[in-house]
Length: 480
Image (cartoon, rainbow, N blue to C red; front, side, top):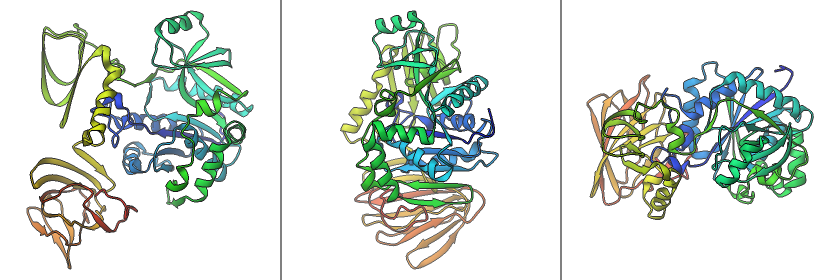
């Protein structure tokens, strides 16, 4: 790969991954799922991009609510402190507006001749050398003015992917997810590839093509960027897209808006160990089965059981006399599904959402910019949380109308504002905050601050917050 190319990896990190509930949720989506080696899909994508020769920066397009967790994920693996940039969406508008924003940002900050390498945050690629070779070929085609997509050599008749019919590097057509019969025909033909959803193109080329084939996308995103707030730090910068103008961006994928209409599309066929982990069946295939075909992550006791997948990192699961099941255990939800119905898990999420149940959106452990909180127990008029505040981090200065709080420091030291008082609370000490009092806690130490918070009152939901000051720009938000 030539160092003269200005290659900018663009990681698209969105979507709820509803078929991987209860681990994947709206505020903890599929890219944050950890695999057996302890790394998340998002971390693996970042490392894959950062390892490419000539890469000096990585751009991520994600939801505003997920940026702090994304930065934490990167910090754990970004040993070289590679600069990062973020485009933050207030809500999803599919991939065409996201890529238009990335291209316009790159044009302004890097140059119109830069090459964008678009990667999904929730794919797994196991052959880095083959991946780099495919990127090399894609860059050559992109420099010649092509919009390049990556086609995966199919290993079998898969009905869950779109296909690309190709003649060498020339794309004949894109095909929607086929029936099984059609998928078998595609495999037999030898000229069909799985559509990976990864792309490579020059900034000026893709902007010109969007202007021709999807002008409303380009115009709306240009207007949005003009109204958006930008922040720049030493090693990262971020653009927070203006919600009022972003709402006018068409909700359309880059495939529909551009790739299926452009006359300048090319494909790179590759075999890179690619997996689109779109269901529990796909995830289970990453593990070696035992003699009975069972795959276990965590601890499970099996008797007369075959071809089952069990994920239970915290509790023992027992299976007796069953076959072909998926069992996923989390602290607040358990999934049991037949393997043939793995694609239908999203229907459970739809029911939870329709019922207004928080389990579609949040885990019991909830990530915030300052750390995490975990609901340990709740009942009528009380809720108990475990709160972890990162070193140097602070909750907002806030007040509650309907609840009082009792804070007990388990470890570390807390600097607390409680009404007119500012006090230090050490391990095994506590303070009481009546309803209506302004309060805040920050961690002045070098280790995590761990507290137990006991809430009591008539209303204990997270939207009972009046926020006065916040270092994370959430004064108008409703989360702690």
